[in-house]
Image (cartoon, rainbow, N blue to C red; front, side, top):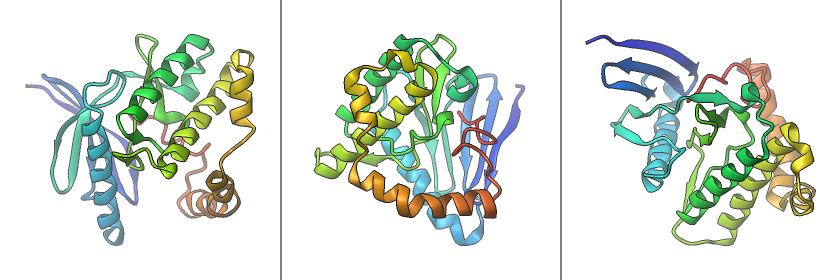
Length: 218
């Protein structure tokens, strides 16, 4: 049996590996290498991702959980290209991505991190894929907070459509882009400046909120 391992990401919350063997490729999220004070948070985020993916099991375009233990999450590998590299300009791709989002929301999951282009993939067959569910929210009820978060998922997807396929935006979509929710406006005014300071100045993540050095994630 032959096997290979490629480190995709390493930060204070651990490591993400692309592993391949005779059975195929998979992604391994490993919290054992997380900074000691952050290991409980890293494990919490890992369990959060696993819970969301288990709820969404069987939906094409999303990873599937292969195994999970206290320190690691093994999930299927989606073969594709991050949006910021693919620069997809076909309107049909975004229509398909909206349908995928609707299926997620109907199942009771919001992503909460679609502002980052690397989390939206153009799969090898041209269809959309979504990864990195560490911040995902699972809810059995469509509460007001859930609906606001779902709307933000949609708005972030529309921002990507505006970047690469602006001419295909509808009037309704332009209206959504022009009206971020109150929580989003508060985040932009308060949390985001702190986030950017920590990630870019302290941690050295000098990218477009994940569109650069972390773009290899699957």
